[in-house]
Amino acid sequence: MRRSNSRSELAFRLGIGAFGFLIVAIVCTIGIVLAVQSMASIRKFGLSFWLTRTWDPVAGEFGALPFIWGTLYSSVIALLLATPIALGIAVFISELCPQPLRQPLVFLTELLAAIPSIVYGLWGIFVLVPAVRTVERSLPELLRGTPLFSGPPLGLGLLSAALVLAVMVVPFISSVSREVLKSVPTAQREAAYALGATRFEAIRTALSYARTGIIGAIMLGFGRALGETMAVTMVIGNNPRISLSLVAPQYTMAAVIANEFTEAADELYLSALVEIGLVLFIITLLVNSLSRLLIWSMNRTSRVVTAPEPVHASA
Amino acid sequence: MTSAMRKAISAVFAAFCTASVLLALVPLGFVLFFVVSQGVQSINLAFFTHLPLPVGEVGGGMANAIVGTLLVSGLAAAMAVPIGVLSGIYMAEYAGSRFAASVRFAADTLNGVPSIVIGLFAYVVGVLPFKQFSAAAGGFALGVMMIPIIARTTEELLLLVPPTMREGALALGATRARAVFTVVVPAALPGIVTGVVLALARIAGETAPLLFTAFNNRFFSTSLRQPISTLTVQVFTYATGPYEDWHRQAWAGALVLVAMVLTCSLLARLATRRLERMHAR
Image 1 (cartoon, rainbow over the protein chains, first blue to last red):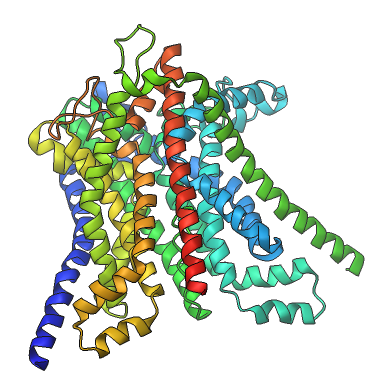
Image 2 (tube, helix red, strand yellow; image 1 turned 60 degrees about the horizontal axis):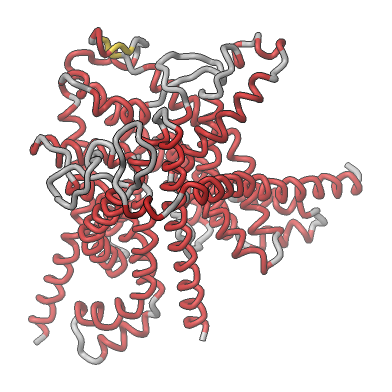
């Protein structure tokens, strides 16, 4: 009896374990498949692929530096805009907000994450871009002389992309930060109040206690921004030229794949695009792993089990 | 620093936090406002019942894209629900084991993989060998995206089931499999279903993984081996095209997408509320 029980236990464990293994297998397969498909490009160009700034498929010249630049630049600007606001939201909801308002606010902010990327893109093209164009036109001459704002005011460009991205990553950063703040022991704040701290000073103590997790939350947002495709593709202007200007149309790794993949006629072109995808995969993998490590170590030290992944609009 | 100044700083900080909530709600309001106001003007019965017209002709609809979205999302769910739920059960049942930790890590990793990269993967696996864009490849791409969402939701919900329930079943002599499938999973089932609905809403709104898997199709199709039109890809095509009437239809498509997401989110929220109340009792 006992024996058959332990056998059925083993069968159960292996049976459902196989499905768990499938997830691990999928992740590995993605890496392998992309690596194999980009071999042609890796062999042909080697490292210079990532150091060259000319992208001219017709001439067979493939340099991916402009895409790396555009991806990093737009994501960093987006994070600069999103982080203070996301942290403000997290603090407001977890520390300042009256109880009955809490759930509706959580729902509304997470709704930002639920709206499809394509809808942001559509809104970006027809509402945001014209608005940004008007603002760019009215910039003072002095500012337009600086490298940060040089170029014709098209509206389509890095600034529009960064704005859309900022809106899209705010819910991720704020919901993870909120979880992290929740795991700060109440004693921390109470101790601060007992010492005569103002509300701001008490919250600052909590924030600095939670800083590892908050950095993790910001990195999670960074990972999202790096891989965001549709909305960015529709508003960034899709021009593979490296520029410091926020006004200039630029290009990202995800956007070039989305735009050019179905048009890529020859094998080398396809392979070059897959290589861009491979590197995007590796970068987001590293950023996400690091972010999870930080959030996890934060949760472990405070001995509170929380689920940091924001399942949008649920719970 | 004087205490008045410290109080002032504190007040400014509170004001900043309040302002940032309002600031985040502004784009949400703007997006919803434009989608609804533009969409309502553009949507009509033909949108749901007609096919797209040739370039230059005004009118037509997205009937084929609506069917396509349903078909591709259905395929994705058929693939992702069993894999996601069973691996979620594994992670919850063997939570402490090292392999469960690897599965959890893989699921979180997969969840963070950009959707366009999933599209590339599905292209190489599902399009290249057959030399044909297909609805099946699109369903596969979305299914891969859906698996980790369902797996993690299932895991979380199973961990909420009181351990006494499982212990009761085991004490009555049930095997572990029996205890899981007849006692623990049913207890968490409403939550799991909610999670699946939310995951469906999310992947039905995806565009990037479909661009070069399901591709697009001007005609009505339900064949798994043919390219198929979807709402999201159709909205992308129309939004980036040069015609007024295309833009109008793109807004109508966006309205349908947003209405779908909002309905699912609201339903899920109501369901979780009811669940919470039940647990509170």
